[in-house]
Length: 138
Image (tube, rainbow, N blue to C red; front, side, top):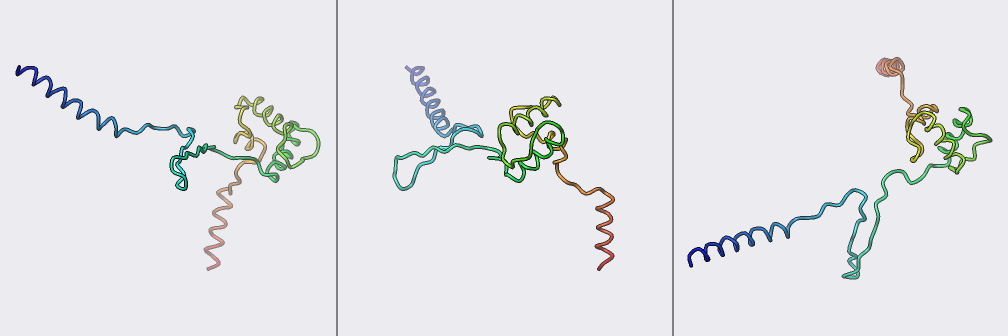
């Protein structure tokens, strides 16, 4: 009789310990999983929103710059339209493919740098000249 009560006590203790910790655990969503939010105005109504990382589109002025560089490099024909269209996308994918880079996402930063459209940085000599002239003018 004593053994049954000890076993029952241990089982009860295990259940009481495991259940609250399991109930407190949160599931972890990935960064691209849909977000679920409850609207405060109508209880019980659920609104689904999706997370879309990254840039949504290419601005027309940037598209024109890229098109001009692709024309100069021989990957695109005609005049720049200023719109990111299928021919521009195909030309960018061809440039990236020719260099062994990814072709699914466009434009690749390495391709933009190769076209001369990467970040503009001052040369060390120019930066030091600016510092000296700024300090000398005080």
